[in-house]
Image 1 (cartoon, rainbow, N blue to C red):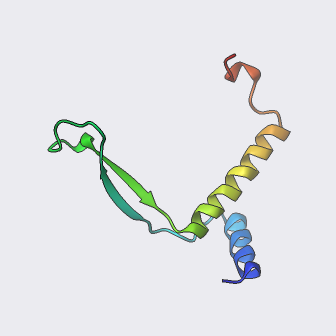
Image 2: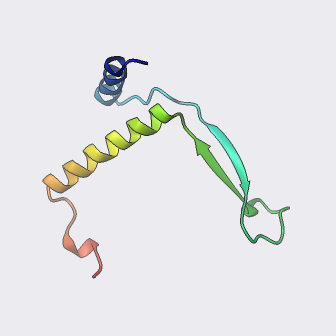
Length: 81
């Protein structure tokens, strides 16, 4: 996939608010040190998105964080010392 095409897809996705990759592979892993694997909470589902989808999510997260910082939306009382 060419970088220009990927950039166009990302920009269109951000402009329209539509995530183009709606399907993911989910893998079920056994939880560590769980004595009873007959219970649902003994397993951990992990979603495996395509790499390009993960990259899009990182781009969006960085943009949101930049907006939060530039608009000073988080008061210092949100953080502990």
